[in-house]
Image 1 (cartoon, protein in one colour):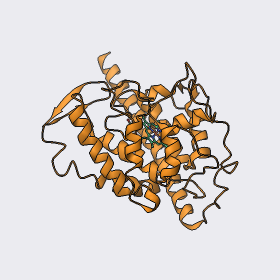
Image 2 (cartoon, protein in one colour; image 1 turned 30 degrees about the vertical axis):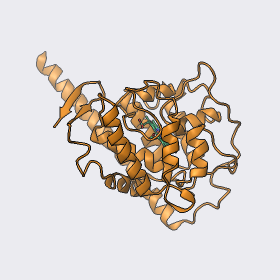
Image 3 (tube, protein in one colour; image 1 turned 90 degrees about the vertical axis):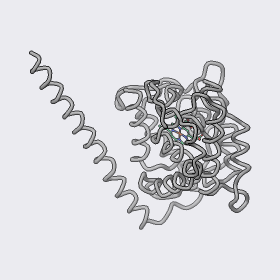
Image 4 (cartoon, protein in one colour; image 1 turned 120 degrees about the vertical axis):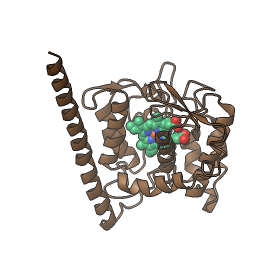
Length: 296
Ligand code: HEM
């Protein structure tokens, strides 16, 4: 009996691993093809990047009882009715279809983001649904030291925009017209990590969350072009400016491969962890299930 259970578990483990490998292979291969197509095909003309040329459905801020989350981009979609306005009961597949139509991400990138969210929430991508606030489970995808939210320790409601942080971010651009550059975003992320560590006795940032932070921040530079004038409304009100279009105009949308050319330099240019200011007192590493491990 015991042997039968062991054999069954090993078999199911192998099936699940194999399924995972197949899913990711099935995603990264087309993603690579999309990146190649983007390299050779001309970009979409400005004004025609997304259907409707930037004429978005009406912005309505969240009403009493509506559900919002720590991700400004998803809140924007709900505020414009591009996903259910109440932010509830959204199919993962519906979200994956909607993201490219708003932000011009490649279908593979949109699938990766949504299927990863389903995975960490332990739900079925093809069957299940989510409320936006589900993605705020601390230290699953949501993490400390964000650019647009105070830490969960300071305010567990991660849907609240931290206007002081947003203003600081938008005031720190050194590019043309004060727009944000890779070095600006790296500097701000480093500063947030040091500040958050000082203010938050429960501060934690596992390596995977450092990468998520750089990945999310790189969206500010790719999809939103680092443009402070647009970001003021997108981050400050979670509203698309009239006529706004994604700054990435690639035919096949922003692929995972291309996106890494911005996300990785952002992470590599964060100095605070290299110069020691992040590690001197030792920091806690939180696991998704809330378990804590002290790092020295
Ligand atoms: C299913 C898709 C997505 C999921 C599950 C997701 C999830 C999240 C989460 C949990 C956060 C909070 C992270 C933190 O604690 O700082 C976040 C932040 C963010 N996300 Fe998303 N996101 C998605 C799609 C997108 C897209 C399509 C964009 C851009 C077009 C985007 C841009 C951002 C930005 C700019 C932040 C703010 C980062 C910060 O405050 O430091 N996200 N996202």
